[in-house]
Length: 109
Image (tube, rainbow, N blue to C red; front, side):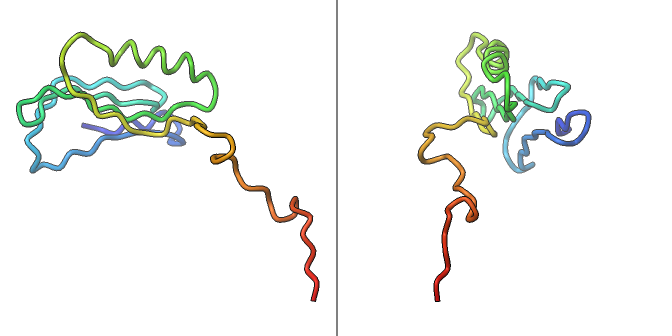
């Protein structure tokens, strides 16, 4: 299974599965921009869907809607989802700290 690196190598996703793991791949979906890879298969005789995504900074609602149409196929597969969602869950906790120059600090000796 090849990594999905997109066209300019500025983004990309992959899923690595150790050869000692009893996994059988049945289908792989990727996009041309390197934003997701979805691997359908059997892990220890259990149907699974492995997803790795790198969400865009903009147009996220469209991206997630289109992605959900690909992933939410009928069936009873277990899903493992990971990646970079480019989402802020809590503005107060996730906001970048101000630069030292913006804090108006003064050194006094």
